[in-house]
Amino acid sequence: MDTICTSDENCDLGGFQSWHSSMDQTDNSVAETMSYSRLSGDSLAYFRSNSGASALSDDNIYSDVDSPSSWQGLKTPARRALSNLRIRRHEHGFDQEIVDLDMELMKERFSKLLLGEDMSGSGLGVCSAVTISNAITNLYASIFGQHQRLEPLHPEKKLMWKREMNCLLSVCDYILEFAPTLQSLEDGTTVEVMTTRPRPDIYVNLPALKKLDAMLLEILDGFKETEFCYAERGSISANSSLSGPFRRIVQPLTPRKEDKWWLPVPCIPDNGLSEKLKKLLKQKRNCANQIYKAAMAINNEILSEMHIPESFVASLPKSGRDCIGDGIYRYMCNAEKFSPNYLLDSLNITSEHEALELADKVEASMYIWRRKICTACSKSSWEMMKDFISEMGKSNKNYLLAERAEILLFYLKQRYPELSQTTLDTSKIQYNKDVGQAVLESYSRVLEGMSFNIVAWIEDVLIADRTLECNISS
Image (cartoon, rainbow, N blue to C red; front, side, top):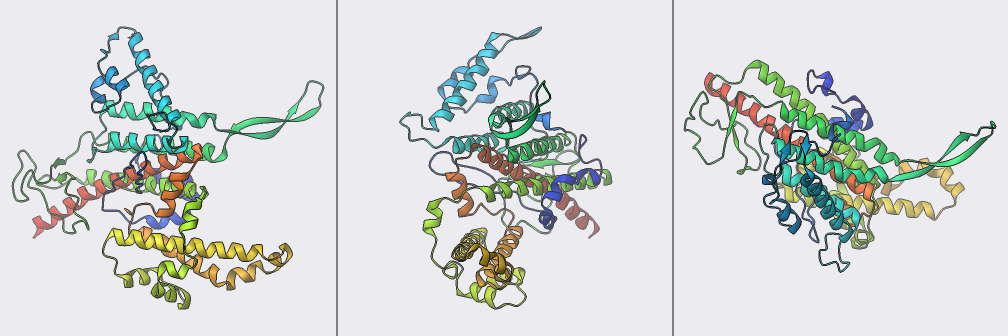
């Protein structure tokens, strides 16, 4: 994995695919670009949509610091004051102002964490888990929000991303658990003592996410010199010619479902892309797609482990049938061979808003049916449940409906990969108090969005090249 996308085998990410084999069904290329954002504070909007694990950490955090120009637009008093500092590089390193600068940034970040983003200090802020989740999401938006093309990230922004993420992720170094271990004394006796170790979910997932982060940055770094360029949409007409070796903007044969008017348009040379570049683009697309699946798998796993808030449970109706409607309920009950694709085709979903609304209903009904299964099991004795657990699982109507609802939700998300997070997932994030889960969920979510965008940008270039070839041949 040290060199990105040198062959298709290098893009396999072997370990990640074996974790979640069901994610392999997402191999279809995604042609649209995701936009991820979160509103900090009371109004939260979560959208779903990364070399070695040490690649993100700076061995010497003061070895290189971005210039004050990168802080423009940051409104806090501390950063406004810091932006006026003159950073002077000496022959053998930085002066004391750099140390003071980083100390002020740490003070500001620490204060926000303690205050829960409530600058009044009245104790009305959110919990630490939500605060650090918002910090990671807002950092991603500030660094990658305006990065909308296949080109390396600006060095100052890249350094800021690594440094800030290294600081935000450092909290996981102190999330530990006690575990019994055997220790031999000098006299030969063996005693059991309690030692600390990293929590299993952080120990497994955090290094993997750091690896994915480094790989995504390396993919972008591979586009320093390309045969294509970009033009802002609307700056030139579709039939106008560009100066230099590039011809007019090519209208794709299969346009996006929703026109992303704010995205730049790729411009292809007159003779099209070279075979070498097309092969490289496909390799990078496959690699980014594997990273997308791995990040999505980690995000889904973390969300499934989060506690379901009581406010969500209280808002549910008593019957799953009331959630999804009579038509879908009858098909899910009566169909001998359940076909989620046939059901989705018959619903005639015309927008992602309708798809998200259906996803909320299906997920809520699935949770209702699973609760009824647990309630039925709790009313029986343990011996009875052991004797009839297999028969009940296969014949119980609620079990069948919950299983089919889960399958339907999976196919729905595959058909609409840009789907925002459901109400249940949003509630879990909003009311989550586990700092470790908050870090893993937000980190995997932003990496999922970054990898999805890269796949979509590469698809845009390849589609433009294929369209140009068709125009030339005709």
